[in-house]
Length: 340
Ligand code: KG4
Ligand code: ZN
Image (cartoon, rainbow, N blue to C red; front, side, top):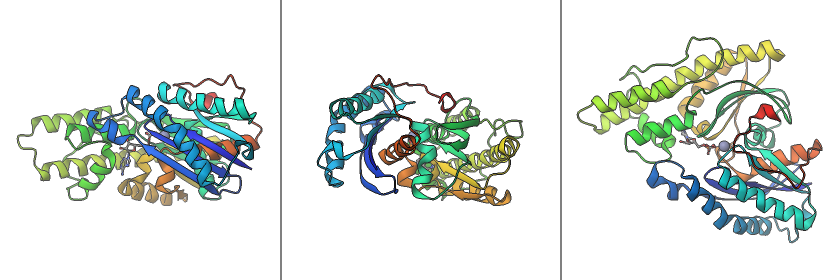
């Protein structure tokens, strides 16, 4: 069984062909970072046009790389149907519908978050259930992954996503986009205790996140600083990142407790989304897992950030569970996992 997956919900156009035996036969992507960088964030109109320009070429390239001549050699077409930027979603879904319609292949609309949450089963043999922390530019939530199509959200951000907070701090410091990798790099040369920053919601019940107050506190420090030199920038990056690590540690403890209350203890803690690339945060998360007798598992970074393989794989999992969509499938900008 082999499925072609299309991802176009944000600023990466990506296509992959994946088998049920977990072989990635082809995986081709085009990032739009260069087009969005001058604006310090993703511009939806630019994103949809860029997806439209490249998607067809990427599909042809993926078919060639996988040595598949005819779409009928595939078993289904999977596509991100939400949540995300509606223009990009429409481009992907219409392309998938076109292929499904002309070939008669089954169509599978994948929730982008389900794609992130299931990727770990493509790269590792992780059984259900597991606890997942999904942290990206658009999402920040704890999920109990009971099985395909079955999720419980334990908590999530009430304002900014974590990647978004990294991006905004980088923007305030004029560091470029995406901010996460730059902030992590500069933080290596800074003093993580140089500035004391607020930790919203820490110590409070539940396992929601909030980063907006932290971001505002960083802004106030920057506004009050006379000379913005390298030392200052490194110190603010390091202090921000340490504060985020402390917040994650506090929220993780709550989430693990909530998960235990919900379904009993689980063995695996899965990290997903672009922020999983951050080594400093990863060390904190790994340590917190150890304290709770859990094993941290994260897919390789290439599969943590937005990619087509995660959509193709979610397609495989859904196809095997008989979860096929009609040709009337419509993309949804908002689509919480619990609505599945
Ligand atoms: O999963 P992803 O590629 O796209 C979304 O679905 O958003 O994640 C991108 C986000 C960006 O906000 C980026 O700044 C953040 O992940 N990110 C990082 C790091 N690498 C990427 N944040 C913190 N540290 C990093 N090393
Ligand atoms: Zn994503």
